Amino acid sequence: MNRMRFLVTAGPTREPIDPVRYMTNRSSGRMGYALAGAARHEGHEVVLISGPTTLDVPPGVDFIHVETAQQMYEAVRDMVRDVDVAILSAAVADYRPVHVAQQKIKKSEGRVLLELERTPDILASMREEFSFTGVLVGFAAETQHLISNAREKLLRKGCDMIVANDVSQPGIGFGSTENEVTLVLPDREIQLPRESKEWLAMRIVEHALTLLP
Ligand code: C5P
Image (cartoon, rainbow, N blue to C red; front, side, top):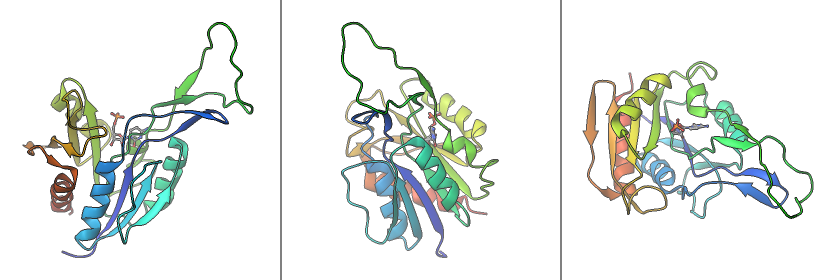
């Protein structure tokens, strides 16, 4: 196999509310770091664009740290040229506060309303906005209708493969060391066994490489 260029997104994003507060989610980043490590282990060039995690960057991987969805969007846009395989596994925040307070919001009696707006959808920007023509792999974390939702995402976001993750099952997915996923391809589905994220990452990288033209 020739040396290919991989781009991987991982981890959560942090969307600031004021200088000391932010919105985020339970993503540990483990699946994405395992994917970056697996691709590197197979001898490929890897850039990992990640939100804040406690993980060590796999050796030999180029690393870009970001905080917000907007920063992740810009980093992907700037790095995507000449990439052969893009695996977008980050748990990007779907919403961010419309206004970021310049000073810490003081507490007072009564309720506070936080107005939120959509963040850019990085995966959905890959084909048209970023003119990406390589193998595109997305993730779908769902609690119901896993395969049909993943298949819809595959078509709508122009992906070649969706890694579908049932996050309603205890012990897998967000924050766990193990996962159980189904690879959803245009013409078939491949159910992988419950395994470590490192083992699954190797299978996902292998499958992605078979999709290269
Ligand atoms: O539509 P949904 O958020 O469920 O899609 C999940 C997939 O889209 C994941 O691959 C995730 O990394 C990607 N995504 C993204 N940018 C967003 C939201 C999701 O790249 N703003």
